[in-house]
Length: 314
Ligand code: NAD
Image (cartoon, rainbow, N blue to C red; front, side):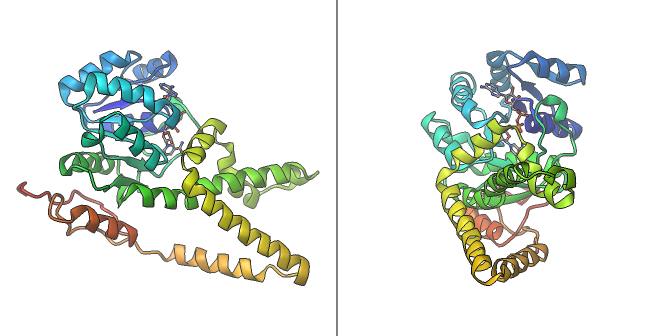
């Protein structure tokens, strides 16, 4: 397995896959991360083409773990040196990545991924092999995906001790806008609002810390994921602003925020009791397997161990 980009996520994938006993090597453009990884006992290089030639020789699964703006350069190199390798990514948006992979002619071997785990820190030193334990890891079931590559990507997520959520890229992006990108923007707005109130930081405790935690994320990363998902983020943002506007109007007119608070509380209670049934019956590669998995993922289903694959024994 070959990881391109040894930052928080790529570095954590490299560590977790290695801990699971996989042969894994990686590339990073800065020497600092390469030296850090090498010092920690991992196989890392700052030579992209040499790393990709090695991946091609090993038929390694390539994991793209760079921010969205770096993808075209990486995909160009992959097309040139390792176009036959199975390919996945960890990018927080899936539709825009799918489009770029298509433009570079690499769709046949590509299955998108997104581990829903992270911290506000960046770089090799921030990585940790336990980052994905119990975390949902989306593995895409778009119409084009190949059963064998899908199985390899799913196995990587399971080796990292994540639970796999099968989803279509467009549905992933609508959900990610609601549960990740919108919270990022609300957290930024909360942080700014508090920063303008004298004494606020002196009194800030749990609510402020929890509500603004993700505002500590590097601005470039936040911009990259929000801006790359603008078509899904815009309607989510409009809905959020509409709810807040109504709450403001009701507070001004009747001194009450009851509607928003009660609806929000009910939604959060539904989340707390949301069940996660295990998906065990789908046969990967059988007729309609992608649609079946997309429906199961939509209903909350997760994959905790490898699914049977059509035509393989055991
Ligand atoms: P990071 O900053 O820790 O690591 C980014 C890596 O990409 C570094 O190794 C950096 O050297 C490399 N890189 C950046 N620009 C590059 C370029 N132009 N050419 C070559 N290499 C380049 O960031 P991260 O949090 O690991 O994010 C990586 C990917 O993971 C992003 O696509 C992000 O959307 C996704 N992701 C992040 C989180 C999170 O919480 N941080 C969670 C899930 C997925």
